[in-house]
Image 1 (spheres, rainbow, N blue to C red):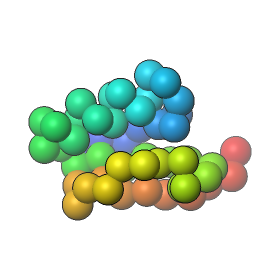
Image 2 (image 1 turned 90 degrees about the vertical axis):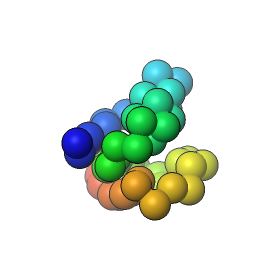
Image 3 (image 1 turned 45 degrees about the vertical axis):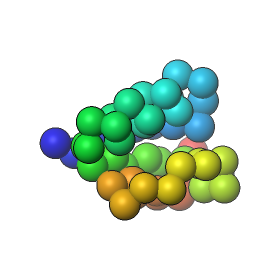
Image 4 (image 1 turned 90 degrees about the horizontal axis):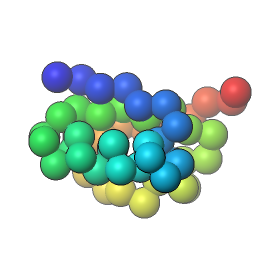
Length: 51
């Protein structure tokens, strides 16, 4: 299952990313600042966007 998470650098969003990756899901996140994502995982795709 592929999951898109918006707001992944926030308190709740970051926990959702962590749980999804633990379940071995493919996760894509859309963030303003990619440096805020401290997770390094082969199933994580980080997209930078302007809101």
